[in-house]
Length: 175
Image (cartoon, helix red, strand yellow):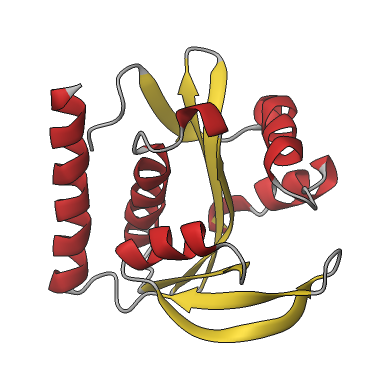
């Protein structure tokens, strides 16, 4: 998979948490705590937490857990200075590929009802809105939209991911 120039994707480790928590604080009204991340990272083979780095600088991350054949994306963030450069797409594709390697069949997630930008981003990846979790975000009482893909092993889904990768590669070659 082509990545933005100079960017590497690797598994998150405890040494990344300082930068991860700083990004959480910057982006989310109710950021995760270090204890939450540590708990998730210690879930063993069912844990899929990855970071995008340029040198030593963390540009973004994605977190997900595997439950039988479902990859549940728990959180994802990209530094505001690096948005719209394909980094979020690159991270989500890495998560999809890891899920496929682990035998997953679909992905699910929750996103704030008011976050139309994120909802549009996920729809591009074949996620559909399948329901609401009422009052899910405790600090505001906001609802969460539940989103899920169809079968990620299906030819049409693989083609969708391939096309997004090709579009990203083309965009990067034009830069």
